[in-house]
Image (cartoon, rainbow, N blue to C red; front, side, top):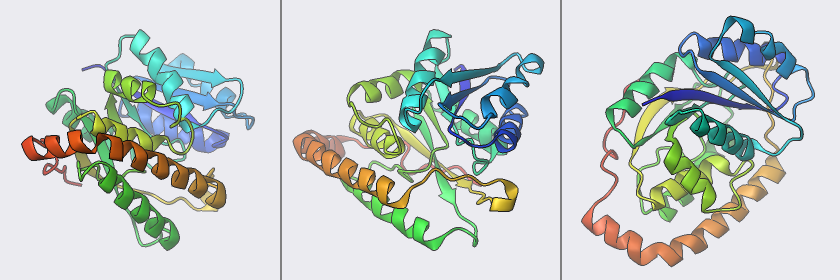
Length: 259
């Protein structure tokens, strides 16, 4: 297994992105940042680190295309460079870089499996966001007949590149905020084993440089449309999914890494 840490970023802020990248580099030599049309100077700031970190690469997209599109662009480049897996993590400092080795070890132990983080929220986490993701997770569980995704929206994951790119190829969507949930469902439809690793989430404050690109109305509308589409796809696949559930399931469903 050859693993790359792949970090999409849009207007994260120069200081916060630099801090997040350095945290990832402390755990893994190969870290690529896909700067998705940012105009906040963060690409130049991270670019200054390249000379001291041979495994660091900064890929700049001319215009903002969305999180999924940034991951797809980076995944294609990673495959061409000889990587077999990517570990995606957000650029805003919420995902714990110190968990990168745990994700890597679990992925190495289970071959072609994906490893999904399941967020462990602290008391400071916004209740509205937590309740909202429960709704999306319930729909994803239905659409996959309980394949065992853990959390459909959490972005810290290890993907086998071949499976990830096949999932992208199966849809013209999943290019923006809908990426995490739709790709998770499509991997389950494809029968990709998924291991779940409980992972603490840090909710940064504005004083710590927190930047959120989440837009409540826009992104919830996108997720609603996504689940409508996925439910239609689920109904078309239902006989095959029922047969698979009766004969075999996700072999890693019961295996959860410890925090």
